Amino acid sequence: GLAAPVSLVVSGLRVQFGGFVAVSDASFDAHPGEVRFLIGPNGAGKTTCIDAITGLVRGTGSAKLGDDELLGRPVHRTARLGVGRTFQTASVFEEMSVLQNLDIAAGMNRRSAALLRPRRTVEPRIEAAAEQIGLAGSLEQRAGTLSHGQKQWLEIGMLLVQDARVLLLDEPVAGMSHDERTATGTLLQRIAEHRAVVVVEHDMDFMRRFATRVTVLHQGSVISEGSVAHVQADPRVQEVYLGS
Ligand code: ADP
Image 1: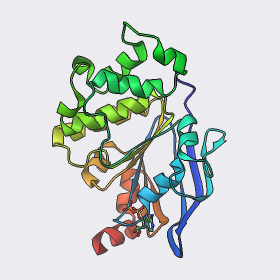
Image 2: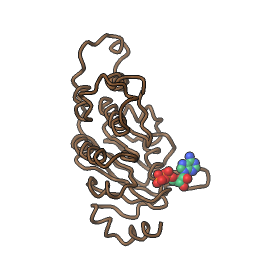
Image 3: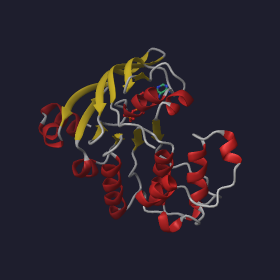
């Protein structure tokens, strides 16, 4: 089953590419029970923060998931510690069914012997994940034939069956219809009841509707943090958004 919910706490994160400092001092946290949005203009360093937390790029400072320090570990190690991440373009196995996609993701946490044993029934946690992402009725459908939104949800479902304890989602509603955005927001709120959720987002309307807490990045530093109402009223945030 799912381990006890834990928080992600990032403090003093710094990422440098050669002589260029992409993230100079980023601190934010994500607690189960809330949806943390990371916003900021293009080039602010949002994706780089996620890249550093997952181990894709090298960062200094600290990023703790529960008691575990994530910085300095490669991607497969942070994944094992419970870090789940989606990219702007969903990557599902298009030729396989929804069920096979979820099964492969779940298998990453199984021993190889268990992988080889044939299973005649759908595992409860796979069924539960499919239910949560709205694809319980489409388990046999080929993933390549899903809508853009459904592919994004399947990718989120793959993180759920991997028992990810924090989900880092890079612009999860890009390219989605209004209804799909609403469904995604509701899905993220439900997921956040038991896991830490960080959403990197450009879409201000989506942020207003579904963020619990917001961190605003600008040129690699945090310029504002708090509730939606708080950051929207912050003159520094208004300046950055009106000036960009
Ligand atoms: P955001 O996600 O907020 O739009 P990014 O994190 O993608 O911003 O990028 C922050 C800055 O770091 C940008 O100026 C970008 O060009 C730069 N950057 C990102 N990745 C690399 C890299 N691998 N090498 C050099 N510069 C990079």
